[in-house]
Amino acid sequence: MSRDLILGIESSCDDTAAALVDREGRVHASVISSQNDIHAAHGGVYPELASRAHVQSILRTIDRALNDAGARGPDLRAIGVTRGPGLIGSLLVGINTATALGLGWGVPTIGVNHLRGHLRSADLEDARVRYPALVLLVSGGHTLLARMQSARDIVVLGGTRDDSVGEAYDKVARMLGLGFPGGPAVDRLAAAGEPRIALPRPLLHDGLEFSFSGLKSAVARVLTQSPPPSHEDVAASFVAAALDVLTAKCRRALVAEPAASLVVVGGVAASRQLRERAGALCDEMGVALCLPPLRWATDNAAMIALATWDYLELDAPPRATAQSRLAIDAW
Ligand code: KG4
Ligand code: ZN
Image (cartoon, rainbow, N blue to C red; front, side, top):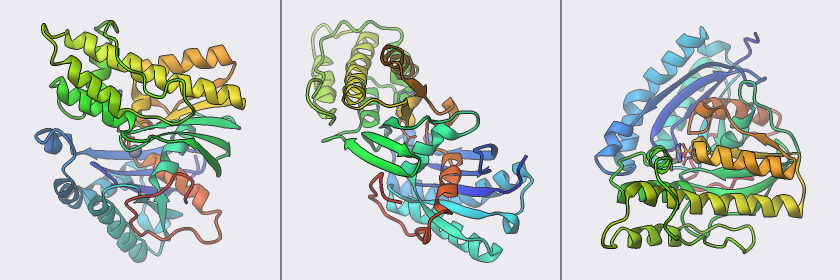
């Protein structure tokens, strides 16, 4: 096994993560310190508390990852740290730590686009993206379709006009009293219900852009009805509407321009139902389905470390400076 390793560091939102990954995408160590308990009381991520929790856990997280891999800081090929998009205070904790360690160890520190990390998550371990690919990125912060000719060549086809689909899952979870983080809980509850409640499918027949705020508001209205509908059915109906939209847009993009694979990445790609629906669509279209192994769908540092290998090929890789907003096609 190659001992040429990159240390990835991720702190853009509410997870502090460190991982060591080789050029082939093998994960030698991965540690994720979750802040779920801290944010659960607020029903969502509370930025100031997130930064403080990152400060408390980041050195411990990195130390454990190095120990697990049996690696030493000065022997690393590089450190890749998420530079954006994300919460500025949270990003700064990862960036300042990575920069200080890089200086101390004499190792280059590179600022990495979190979204490029998600794209590369489908190349971790034994997973491999087949190009040209249509990519559906569905996370808490983003929902977009892109075409990729290679890991470095990304053209955005459509984004969301308002909420991301992950945000809609989280807000519906809050309305149903399912706590935080909400996506996995909605996904589980939906499996116990029937999609018998009529809900809108925003922009279903219209282009490659998304909109989820109307769907979220419709769920809120349904919950005020008397007698109240079963929460299982509300969750199932919401998931059916959201997945109808996601798969319809993928189908439209694949019809307009065929691809070798459909790649689904980001936290919502952990949804069992989305994985099944994407699989059915790929069978129908004769396209390969490329998914990250389940544990690399939600935020982690292994995907950041793997993406950092691409940055080493650039003449001038970006420095580690925090960017709260960053487009997917930016380095
Ligand atoms: O990629 P990610 O971990 O963080 C961002 O970069 O935003 O995505 C988090 C989002 C959250 O909205 C969370 O509720 C959703 O992914 N999520 C899920 C599942 N697991 C996480 N949504 C549906 N089903 C899941 N199993
Ligand atoms: Zn993410």
